[in-house]
Length: 149
Image 1 (cartoon, rainbow, N blue to C red):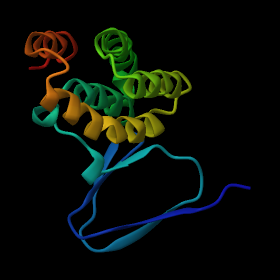
Image 2: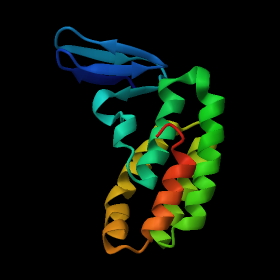
Image 3: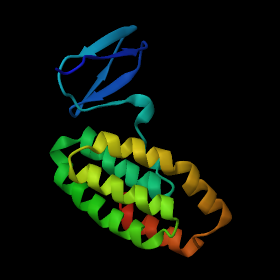
Image 4: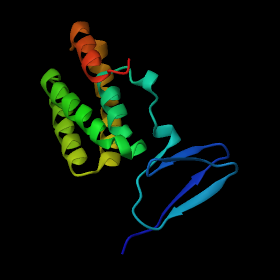
């Protein structure tokens, strides 16, 4: 038996459910009685916020949830991006988690993949700050996996 998922939204908040964008005009609680794909507004990354390699990967993965009609295109971009990141990062923790993220996306669990990617942000920040990745490598990754920029 599946459990009911209950979330509360404040007035003006948006939620992305199965590709639809909903904005509530007053405080409301929603109960999901079956499986649903959703993102809360505070977990949605805007294109201009996709400033690092992992944030760009996150943006691509979130597009699979927000825009189900474009899932095939997003999956193609994701495959290209994950392969590039696995070849560029040297940090064992990031590499292991990226492999798990790849498996999650392949298993149609993009929501769980987003959560895993967000968990890598502090490590990525440390790597970029410590310049374990050269600026040229970072720029090359940005150009390859962020064609909208």
